[in-house]
Length: 483
Image (cartoon, rainbow, N blue to C red; front, top):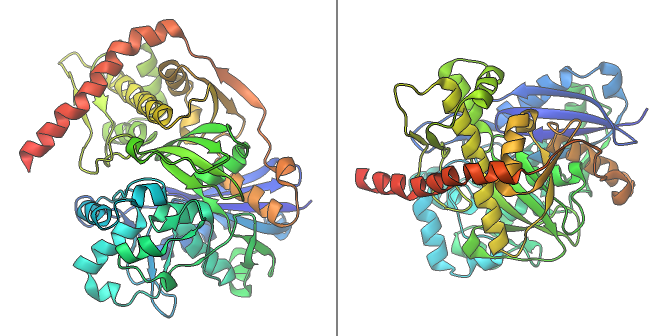
């Protein structure tokens, strides 16, 4: 049996997926990661931790399965700045997608290049790679002076596996250096951010072979030496391949640590004012529009950790709880639609009678409300899907999926294995790289359950959505008053 390995470098874990020639998931494995925050707003990881987690996760796979892997594909968290010196060693910890330190650098970049949003698909935001390097130049000039190469997280794992400096269009798209229409690095964007274009990797379509597995990595991982490694994709585009969103109009919602509302398009359709990300897809001649929310399903896990209770118990109580407080879920700021790195989360309307179930209900509502905001932003950019598939760990919750369907007025479909997400897309890119047909491999999964919107529930919850939307500017003014 020929197998294909997908490796997804997430924020909270490295996830692996083995699929067979028919596209079926044969096995999965994962290994947890930790995020460091050396100062408020900072979010970092040691690139060596990714390599260690890949090794630990791979060791969990059956040795016989590993011996039959014929190709590897990659996926990963986007935007992270992995800075390498001339010896290809990391200069400092990687600065991640949810890091908010470079707010002033974003404003500076936009002032230097006013058309940057139209060129690169969305206005600069603190999580993007280019403003992070501008921050490093100001605050750690000794590190900046050593830069010889810049990679994205999954591309650093690619370097470990095959030894080449390679990225793909979808991951390059999130750097704020990429000309989305031309699908190549932008000399203008590089100049505006004081970036040497020679630092940036080659860009290959995600289904193209970037290199072959080095002997050292093969031995460490128990995989066949010399097997091809596909360039891979950023997690959003990899998730699209995994769920078959590879034709114009195909779309999905992603409920991981972050949240995404993703729709594939046949051309480049930027709308910077809506803060929708208009990016190149990992496959040729395709683009996508994506609303990107920094907090996704993460607030549910945060509340469970805070209360030291299992998520499943709290969700069960939430379903039975009466509506109570309103929650603003911006634990790490927000992108779509606010573009506000400074806003933070909070409950409004707590009382002595507020139960833990009511608090979790408010969190679930807030996650759904972020998708209602995302839908409005996507509509302003000219796109309004009437049904979507769902991927990510948050799809385990029927309550959350039904809530999202109700507030968006969109039919949501969950398939078996929906929580595998980008790792499956990475495995499929590996299969395509070895000669398989895209249409045959990147098929839409069979939906195990549809969540149809309920107009009556949507009408009942509408006042709470209005309150949620009023809470953001109120708390923003509180933030401003405290500075």
